[in-house]
Image 1 (spheres, rainbow, N blue to C red):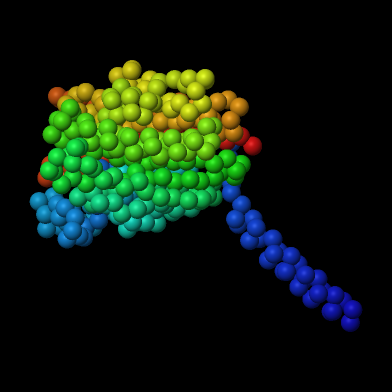
Image 2: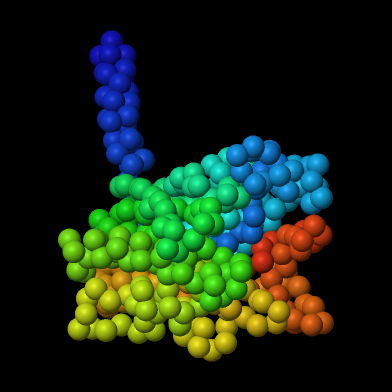
Length: 349
């Protein structure tokens, strides 16, 4: 008689104890010793639906490009293959994504679904409808806040041209060691119309980014800040080297200085975008001085450009170049016209 009463009581107590503790475990962040943070211009990741207020009709089934569901999902899975090859970064900035739907499909309809990715995205006023976004492994990184920096060009920059561009995405988050990281994801205006002619637009956007960074530094000169993006400028161009003042190496006497992790690669003739046989370092990662300090809980290592032969195309004129999805109306079925970049980040306990 005692046995039949005690056993149910013991079992009931065990169930309550287990149910109380398991939710706490589920909310804890996993803190590996080392992670990767990357950026990738995914080249026109559009869905197949025409949005009337956007210039996106070329990426529809009835267009000259004949963009359809089969090609769309092939591109999603091809891009996921790249993410897998760079070992599923804990954070990955993206540009040239059309909307929230394509990001959701990228996460839920490919191999990325195994890694608990979530994302941050805002719809921008870009005329073509392309935006920036950040995807992140929610078991490693917790988003505390996110916002966008809207770019409203004055007439002194654009003249009478009705020009819109992508927002700058700002995400503030934390790793399991409670170290806060500010991430900015960018896609600066293109070089269309000429490098010098288009430069004022990129300079203006860089000023808005610098203002946001300086505001963070005003509250904490040792803030952890990581800036990534396709800047459509190289590391020595005015928007990067002068306005952002992102330099190849740290100035230990200036905690608020910015270090361009891509500068050494650029100086060595490496790049992420091949223009007529010349490599351009358009995609860059820039970090605050604190992230290069050996005593900091977050420490960023060297930058890598991911490039494998299976994602490249060799032309007689330009040599090896990223195998792109389209060249004009011609469908090549490749990954992207840019190469992805990444940095290793050590997470101190």
